[in-house]
Length: 470
Picture 1 (cartoon, rainbow, N blue to C red):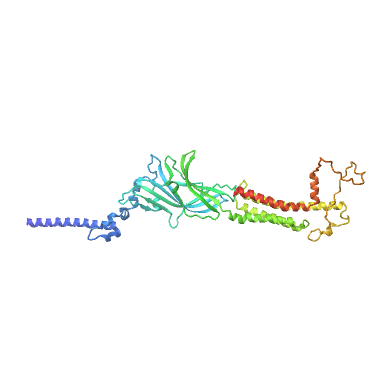
Picture 2: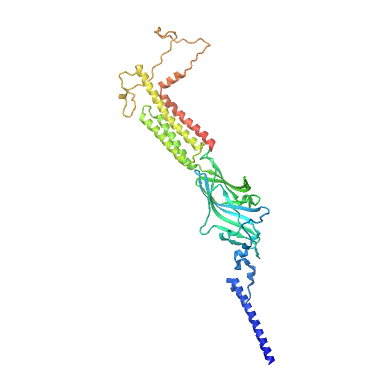
């Protein structure tokens, strides 16, 4: 009887142990199936395929990222290594495009990829194959990232289509890559003294907002190779050079800060302005010279031509000024336009002088009796405002030889020409009054001189202008 009781107790104990061990084994198998997930098909006969051991455990185990990186265990409001040396943050930039350049607002808009490199040992995690983990913007808000901002920026934003263009890559040793795609509109102090033959130097400046050089050290990660650009084509500018530089900025209340510069040189294409400004201006100036070959008595023709060219030049100047900032200094295009306007204006003034001299010449001839007093000048003009040569003769008077007597009233005969004695030579220069009288008496000479003087002067101006600014 005792043997039976002992046998039953032994069997019960063995069954209980088997049940417990079986439950644990099944639970363990179930636990492995949960962790393996879709890789459970690699189990053969209850054994795990050893290929799984060669994979990164962080890619296969379904562990929360916050638990893997131990985010809850640290205060990420503080920078890495707080209280010690400044944390180095490397920067590299890839410029995707320069969207616009505004002369009126003196700014430019640029789209770029901004990448930060630093090390935060608080985010280190175990990994057999040293493979990194990549996250999006949702994890960025839970850890410390550098507070880099754009100095002199007017507007900026991070692209968010279809998700925010933010990438965070964490390596097992704590090294971090943080990349954002951002568009920024920043100030560019332009100098338009040589516009449109100018070259502009613009820069985009990066700096930490809160951490000075004692807490954070910004630097270009790969030196000059840290700045890369895609193929950028602009409508009005040619990009001559992109280069990176660095420096320090001082603020009286907070101290010195590291500052990085993205410098680029823009050279303006001149062909657009040649077609829109310079060629029309040249044609208007040349057109104003046509009046020098029109009869000086054709008043309506010459006046209308002069007024038309003046108004056209005014329209060109107004159009150029409306597309430029209101600067307080003279631009190169202003010099050219206003000098050309002066040539056009002088051609109108030249005809006013010719017309005035012609009128004086007619009045003198009328006083001297060359034209009968009963002659009505208005009857000799046609409806086109032109005097006709068959009505008025404009031939000059013959010059009277000067006399040698002191009293010209008592002399009734002309004295013969007495030659000076040998060894002496008399030369009489004309006074200014005589030259003016001669010019008034021969008003057609003003047009003759203008036909040569105006083109030569304008050619000299163009030679000097293009040699200075081109």
